[in-house]
Length: 401
Image (cartoon, rainbow, N blue to C red; front, top):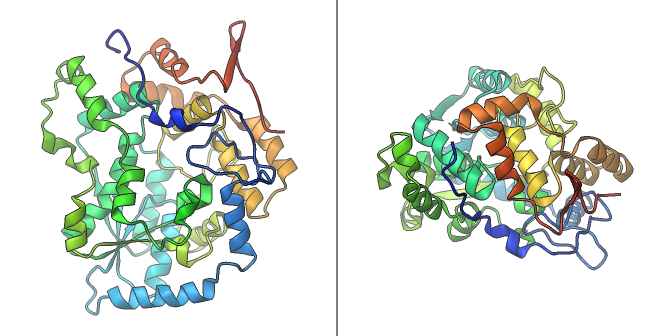
């Protein structure tokens, strides 16, 4: 059910996208990715950063010493929790938790914010990690509210997982406060690894003000304001109170600073290699790849396996920015030297923008939409400089070659 008429979308990142579409000359990434930068030679920021990683410009021996000092500072002597690890049960978080415990003698508490719809393999991988020897906290929000906020986020910003992302970014931080643990260890700096603000290159973690700006900048309050006027909350029988939203909001920054909570990236101290994380997690944490084979929209079968609606997120990325999950996966593997650019282009042309048939019904049921409503929403997020309509078919104006 969509209340009529649909209001203009609230996707603010569109305004900053360059009108001329370009692709990195070294990988396959598009300049339509929000906040990404390209240099004069046509090389994207993540490629330049990866070059620094692999050519020894970043001194990981020195950074390992910094990591040792950091962990020595926080390590408990009596077995109490001394580090929070945001954990989906995926290859990356499983690797980080296992190494912190077994290589560094830390006592991690793994914290998971429940995805919209668990997959069987996602739940199994999380259980495998727990059974390999970890304490774990699962945060599960009010299901009725969670579903509605996902629906509203999809309608107004074309991203139903925005509310899930907020929970993922807030949950471990809140648990650090609740358990009086001062260290939170996230995985990689996505701004550097995938494309964003290259100015964060020397950040061990993210200053809280910047963290809030990057991860909590979407107009949740505006979405809720519009939804209230359109009586969505009345329709779904939700008596929304301000405190109901705290689970999706960052705790007050002054409180985090006062309690000495520190946010750090494992990928600052250690060279971030997703494929190596996969092999490590398989060997040490019982991680298993997708038994159904590759994920929809890409060729990979071992990343982001926990959420049954995840493929819709990547399909919407393709709609909004003209590139999808295959582009993201191939770009990273080109940078790390696992495939050539030619191979990456072929994979993108084959899999990018594939419609997620397996996920579609699950998604529609979750957000309570009909198929025709879905497509009406989708078409609102097609930008004219990215898409053109030929007859009844939408075509990208420019593709990677």
